[in-house]
Image (cartoon, rainbow, N blue to C red):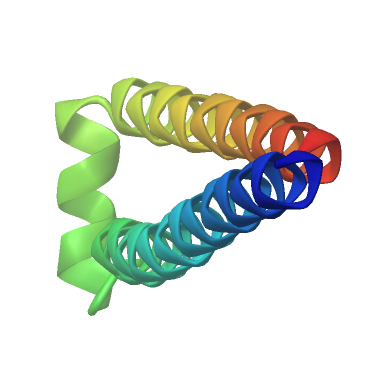
Length: 100
């Protein structure tokens, strides 16, 4: 009787661990895909803000180059904050997996 109960508890713990590991793997895959997407977006932002020709640079100066730089800084700050949030989520998932 005790062996059956012990076996059932072991099975439950194993199933919980497997679920946690699966969730962790899925979270890592999702974060990797998201990171690749944000890296691509950041590359596009940088490319967008680089002047293509001299006339483009002159046009930027006339239409508010400072405003564009401010927007780029804001976007970079947002990306940084999102990366920090992802790191915090990853750490919390690791703690959860460690407890199981």
